[in-house]
Amino acid sequence: MGGVGLPLERATYWHGGVPGLMVGEYILPPSVTGTAVTLSAYGGCVEPRPGYLPTRVYVTPEHKAAEVFAALFPGGGWVYRVEPEGELEADPGSTEPGLSFACERARIIEATPLDPLTIACILESVLAGGAA
Image 1 (cartoon, rainbow, N blue to C red):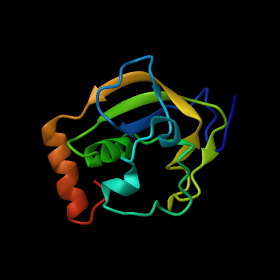
Image 2 (cartoon, rainbow, N blue to C red):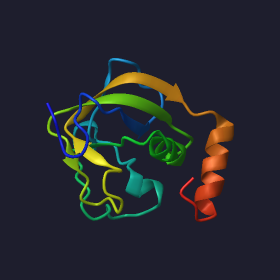
Image 3 (cartoon, rainbow, N blue to C red):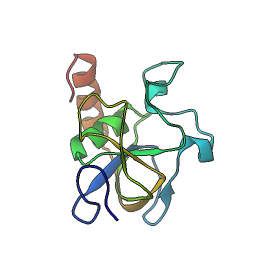
Image 4 (cartoon, one colour):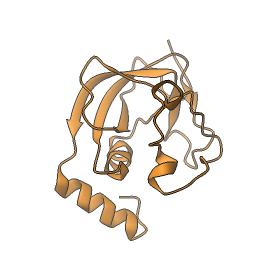
């Protein structure tokens, strides 16, 4: 099973978001879970970003990027090391090639809560215009 960018067998993928999921569980797309809490919603956007697909789960090979996504989750989220399932596609809405990919679902391999200090530092950096 391969995909766009790095082959799945050699890459480590991360997802940052909703807290409290456990190893072995799946991160499922909003079209399945019915959640309205998406990255676009974190920023107060009513409309999803261009290229966003609610039928996909978004993952990144960059741990720091997953930390930013988790920190932006309302109340603070967790970072998950995941194994993407289904076809891995480049995220058409990503402004940085290779930073974000979409898949059907992702199985959780490791789950880590972000500590409040890390969340505060990331949010301060984002508010100051940095990428964290």
